[in-house]
Length: 267
Length: 160
Length: 103
Figure 1 (cartoon, helix red, strand yellow):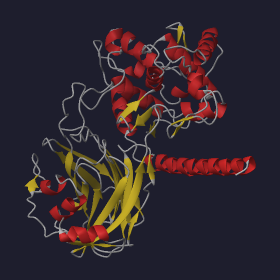
Figure 2 (cartoon, one colour):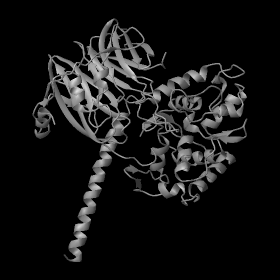
Figure 3 (cartoon, rainbow over the protein chains, first blue to last red):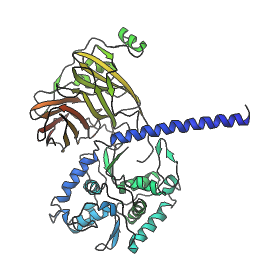
Figure 4 (cartoon, each protein chain N blue to C red):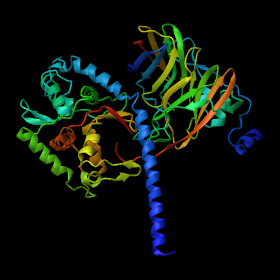
């Protein structure tokens, strides 16, 4: 067979693979759509709503006095504006660090008590932070992402997050951008979102926290970053660290304008 | 190999699924609260093959039926831990709907008893060990019917 | 007593649609823990749903029902304000009952 014939055959083979992939991703999209109903994340939202207004901690105070950025006790719409600068802490905080802040300053927990179990494991090791995050996030469902960079520390966190996104490190010399910096990448049959585009960042950020069926747990955005670090063979991402907040800032801001749609359900 | 099973193996679609005479499956009342003696069929749930599950349920014969539909059920599941299954029976006098999953360690997943007045359509989520056939088994007016659907279970990437 | 479930019961024409989300590990007994020990099976075995006092669905489940089970079905009848009661019993003998009104 001549070169032209071979090329034609090769192109045909490639396009049929693409076609197969296309219909596979359609079917996977259908699977995800069907899963949206009966999302077990609702169970975390219920528990979080309960925890929010329960009197807890050594001071036996509820979190209803916690300011998530829109005023004391205002939960509706707060998640879509986080991370943000908080004057009382004089730093940029994401939801999880803000919750820890309130648990410590208002309820009287120590920081290590509040951060003790960020990622739950089954009904016997539930994470309060995950439940509270699910609840607070659910109250932003439908809100437009609106993360500000007005304060110099917000801008600084954004810049740091952006630099970290492209920073190659670890045993495999991976950066976030290695997997998430281009269109059309995938790992096995999982398509990887391109987080450097507005639409990629929007779709990704607005669907966390999410119930992950593979774990049977609700996971937060801090978890997602922690797990990416693990898979990149990076050192462990510390919960509530400046690095976690900076990366969250970068990605949340990149999602501005999109409608927040979490807690979602994912594989 | 049992004569009946051999017939089943050789037959194509549209032929009745034959089983052996029902072993006497014993019923165990659910431990704990008194639920009006709602029993749990341990013998059926403990079986390890579709054929064994069927005959522990007392099913001698289940006819392939086009009147059993899989509704809101995907062709591919991104993760075998949660596979949505919806079954709708159009067969008059449907009394129960069972879900049997081939290649699962214990193929019998669930049995739903449908009282009069309840629509014979159920949606739930099941675990699948791997790409396999799902059997929707309906009992209507004392007779058994079955529909089959293959669902592929993929190996995901790392995230999502 | 198990964890609370979420029940949604909606009147749709002359029927009622019931959607239930239960909180349960539904441990299959196939998994092993970090030490290599098999985690014992622990799963909902029996589910009953009643409308006022009439049983509208009953089910027997095995380990293949997914963790945090979801169930959806419809029955004829049921009016706004009617009580939908869902009860499950699991392999440890634990049980949970929750009630919701038809909206």
